[in-house]
Structures are given as C-alpha cells and as structure tokens.
Length: 491
Image (cartoon, rainbow, N blue to C red; front, side):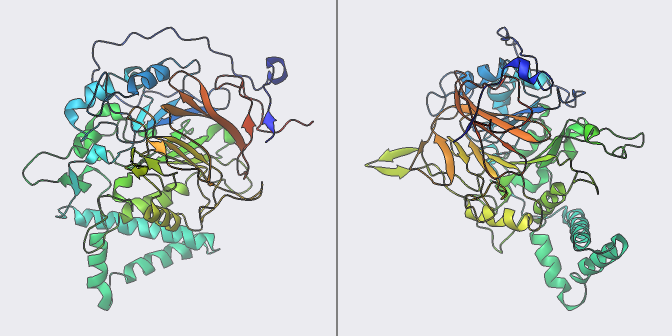
C-alpha cells in the first residue's frame, strides 16, 4: 500500500504544529477532589482537534479482582503525551466490577486526575457501570417522557419532509398532523401503550435498582459525578439532575451570537471541527442489554431519535463545503473481530462478537442521513480497526465510495482478550493494551494506536469522505507536524 512519507519541517511550515518536548513526570496529588466541569475550552490549535479514545479501563492500581492489568501503564502514558489531546473519551466499563461508587476515586479520579482537572475527560456508560441496574418498570415520569418523544418525532419528521423537498411551513404542519394521528382515533390506546413501553428517559431515571429495596444501581451516582464529564461542554456543568446518559460534545465550541444562537453566517473558522456523539448502548439492541428480554418488547426510542437529531446538526448551509466530522462513541461494538477471554481445549470462551441487533438499530436510526465518519467502541478487550464499511457491513471497493471506520479500543486496562481468528472486514486486530489518538483537520483524519510503552501499533489517515485509508510511515509519530492533506506522494 502507498505510504505517506515523513515530511521535513521546512516543507510544511504553514501547516506545522510546533513539537512539544517530552513532558516531565507528573506528580500525582494526594487525592482527587470534586471538580467543576465546563472549563473555558481552548480553540483548536493550528486548525486541528486532538482526541483520545479508550475503554474497559477501570481496574485501579496494583492487583485487582481478575489479576494483573494495564490501567496504570496506560494512564501514565496518557498523562505524559508530548502532544496533549484536547479531549479524552472513556468508552465504558470505567469502574469494574459492578460500577461501585465507592471505587470512583481510586479507579478513575486519582488515576486520571490531570485530565480531569483540565476538563478533558468524558465517559460513556458500559455494562459493568450499570451492573446492579435494571430499566425502570414503573413509569413515574412517563408523561414528560412521552412529551419529549412526541417533540422528537415531530422534529425528525419535519426534517425528513424538508429533505424530500417540502417547504418548511408545510413540513412542520404535516409532521404535527402525522404525529398527532398516531395517538388519536381508534388506534390511540395501542399507540400510547407502545410509546409508553418505548419511552425511556434520557437521564438516570431510566434505571433503578435491580434488587428491590437494595441500593445496587449506581447510574444516578455516575451521572452526578462531575469527574465523569457527562453533559455538553458548551453548557458548562449542568445540574446533576439534568445530566443525560447520552450527550454530544462539539469541539472547538462554535462562536455564538450575543443571543446565544450560532453566529451567522457560520463561517468555517467559527464552526466546530468535530461532533462526538456519546451513546448509552446498554439500552440499545445488544447482547445482555437492559431491554433484551423485556416483554412486551421495548426500545429506547427517545435515544434513537436523539441520535438522528444529533446527526443532522451542523450540516453545511447552502453553498458551504465545510463538513464537520461526526464520531459515534459507545461501549458495545456493532462490528468487531471475535474475542476470546480464554481457550479451553482449543475452544474460544468469553469475549464478544458482532452486535447484530445494534447494527439494525443504528442502520434504521441513520436511514437517509449522511453516515458518521468513525464509530468508536470498546467491550472487547482488544484493538481492532475496520476497513471502511458500507451500510451492509461490507468493505467498500472504491476510493470514492463512502464507508464508516469502526474502531474497537478495549485495551484501556482490563485483562486482554485474544483475537479468535482473522476477520476480512478488519485491517488490523491486536491483543494489546492501548488507546487511539486522533488528529483531525477540516479535510483529513490521522490516527494512531499507541501501546503503554508509546509504540505505534497501527496508524493511517484518510481524506474526509474517502473510501480508502493510506498507511503512515512507521517513523511518522503522533506528535509530528501534519502534512496539509492525507495524500500519496507522487513517484
């Protein structure tokens, strides 16, 4: 495969980012304190955004329930990156084994204290973080949830009708009428019952204790814990009771008008470069998920509609070409090589495979929308990067055919899984402690998988919308000056 060769600084002065010297070792404070989120964020430096993703990390220091692990080494590497990231996303299973709030300090706050104090840390909920929870059976808040669901349905239908060419006023009226028709007349009773079953609140009230009269669920405590960074950056630190279990992070923050709305016209320089959409996959279609065995069948419809709405935000205005990067981040992987926690007599036990129902749900939720650029996941304790995949999960065949890159980055600290066998959908699959480092410009994405020793285990780049990845030279490191584009040198 053609490779991008390491560029000399003199060639790329206009696009160069000054190299940052190796940081001195950080002294860990005696203990983490409650922090106020919503620090004033810096703007994108030199026209780029730097992001880190990792998951399955929460084992703490020393020896833990399942033996030796790699969280300490990965955390140390994160704390001393020569080119610090703007944001770091932890993709679930942040606190093993049952998400106990008594372990927040030792397994997250103390370990990632430098990132937390700089307001860089944001988490998704993993299955172990809500191990003692179940979804609510009694709908004490179902009236307000139904109102939210109805509003989301109207907004989605209006947007769909407008994409089909309808004028805004007519689209709004038709969306209102169609939504109202579902809950009136002879079908109203069944329609409302179905909506009630599929109306799961977006906040921590979606969960309750799995064992009645016993405090086993830590979902509410997790959302209240400021160090976890739930909630949007642009709104600062939302009150604990308003924090959502799924949320969106724009970076850098868009320039706003005096009234608080996006400035008009929204020039590329004032628009965000990336929107990271963090989902709670525990209530989506996943094996062992919260809604998997519910009868009658239930669906987190409000989250899926919220996803559709989030994917339509910050699209180019007429005549604009600037398209921001869209990244979905969640715990469970729609696509992954098969992982093995162990092998007995050659048989693969434990580990995880594709989430087929999640594939279907996401496909339906994103129907007729531009797909995300990346899907970042964990759950399988390994590293994997897919080829660009089409809507059917098949690698695309042409450079101009758009595909989605699926990353599995479950090597944040928990005991690792083996890769069961080669998977043709994936360009790389490794059993290694690691994290993924992304650098995004307006047109190009560069990625590196870095292990605990700082070694590059995988890397590459692609132009936005391109169906082919380019390999990076092994000597091209994550903190080197970026070329203007991800292009192949002639000759």
